[in-house]
Length: 362
Image (cartoon, rainbow, N blue to C red; front, side, top):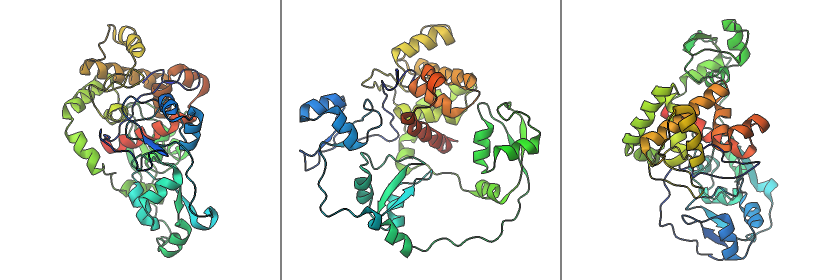
């Protein structure tokens, strides 16, 4: 959504990767925590429970005070520790990798989802993102007991491969995909300016042990719960796919943005007034419609909403020369903010989430 953050932080949209049940019950310790209901704001919760917004932000490690969602559990006051803390002896850390779940991480370290969620004050155990560092209770002891994978023998060089550049791709993304350096690709293809590559160009990808490992890695599997939701929303998927083709936006990229923003839900309106599948503010629609499409758009019409959102992605892809991280940051925090200040820290989890979703839809 365009212009989400005015100045430093303002505005929000509901980013639904998985649907949240509407009838979630409050925790037993109602005086110590609260479950966010549809339409709640942080300021409203603070007033009702006699605390300040600042206290809630600090206690729950909220990066954007305007961004809470239905079903999220918020602590209202610090929870007293039952035993003296000894984190250095009992707690390790784990950097989340793409495709990992809290369940898998807990199983790996011989602990529980609840223990990790409590140690990191995670409001929603289903929402972790690549690159996030988690404290894992008992990880030090568990890691000693869990056999570590054997170190492989000396790598064998792999045969060079090729890659056809797609619209919107950057050399950075291509290098990351094949687990190789930008410089290696540039040298192999005689590229003088790595920032300037053209769609349709066939690149020679130098072979290496690392690139072989990247190429043989299995495609990331979509979580079963998400796959069921995706299967039930084929009409919206088709609209996004058609509009992506219309404007030359990578299909998986457009699908990922739509899913992050709304879960492809047509009638969704956020507390900030963002509308529809692509979660566009009316002011954004007024800009994209006449300025980019040549006519006023009705954001409550699914086709027009998607068309405006995808057209905005095309604008940002052109403006930022295919740099998807900056494209997504602009969609979230606004073009002016990106141009002046770059990518805000609060935007990085949003960017990482969509880039991961893109791989699921690819």
